[in-house]
Length: 618
Image 1 (tube, one colour):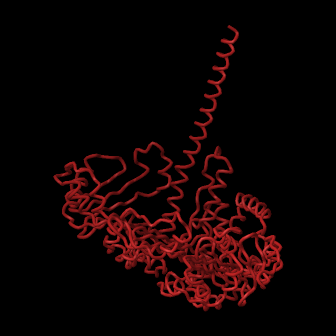
Image 2: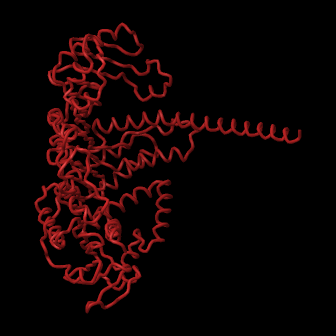
Image 3: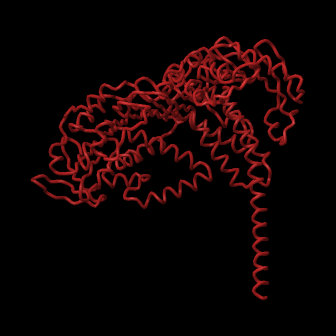
């Protein structure tokens, strides 16, 4: 077992988790597990699936074992694998609930049986001597020199599965796993190293330099599973490892990753500790004022970009392009701050807003007045435009637009309002009719994405894609049933995601990233099962159901009650419907053209064959 396989080995072990634990939980009576309504309200689930902070002391104990001069380490605190498997098993169960998913999962289970350890079978995991409720770790010091902490509780069973042998080397009884890994119980753990000499030294608390640097990390980068790499030190492990960043970054220090696991949720973070330079540094200097101003809007979804406009404009051609007497490069593009933000407020109305930061409003007001003033004269059917100074309001009746395909018009039964307005510090577009904001609290992830500096961010909370019916019965009869089931499968899986957010940004101390996913599985079992039943009924009938209203009455503090009631849910549903309206006709046209092309090729082949046969006869 070569050293380069140590990391994937631990990753595989983390993935299997304690399968029997998840199974026993699902077998409990959900009513007995939750109790009556009063108990549920008095002890609600963790708010909206936010992943809790880990017990840092437990991971610090593992990092303290890292030998001196360790350049890379991965640690998983006790119970991390069990939590991870709980999420994986729930995803599998969700997929199995649909016909297509059941088929795919069955194939996956069959393949899993061919591995040394069937990670989907609790009995197989137990028979391998593995108990992933324990801790695990990997440490690398130099090339072909590494160490493992494994959650092995049955040494003999583990040795049997790995085809190892029991040997005594230099007075120490060890499990010889292949040629270059030896393991033995020591210091209350099952430890492995690449030689007996190293194994004898491994197991004591070293508190080396890497462990100290981990302890000094910002709290948000601590997790139930952690990865830390000393970038300069990695050259001792990999001769091909390079830190040449073409003058865009310098002085790399650490690469950090962490995963926090909650009740049906996961938050992964990454940090590349490096000094930004040139264009990368310019990305960090873009102002971050529009996103912070969204707090009052209580958004249910948002996206944002912060782009270094000066660096981008420098790449533009130098031609003197004029528009309404304005220099396109200097007066227009040069007037953007580089910050772009879009969001949907927490409102019962379907509306959203996009804002672009500007330095001087005058050029944009000139362009707005010119463009909006010309619009009424164009006389486009279905579009009613009202100009004003620095403002342009439009009402679009999609049904009256001269569209080549009227299918899209079916998705908009009422006219759509769009308002563009130039303000002192932004160019703002409002889509839909502005309605009062509900004022509900924003999740921890949404709040972070608004307040911290990110160059890219996207987030949505309260997603309830299946709470609004989709017109399955209106699909053409010629659409293959498997194609429809594939769409339903995708909707079914997405319907189980309550919140998702991701972001990446350049800051003075390096590059940061985050990914957060929370599912409805974080709700109390009874509320979660009721939500699944409601989604199933909606997918089957294609019509609205009363179950979602019942859920909001019985479990008002649940994610199932909060999801699918805001603008984000309606917008996502609308986008899904639009995609279906476009994708299905496109699929049918592609299928028809494929058949026509096949017939043409067959005809050409027959003609060529006839010519060849005629030529041979001559």
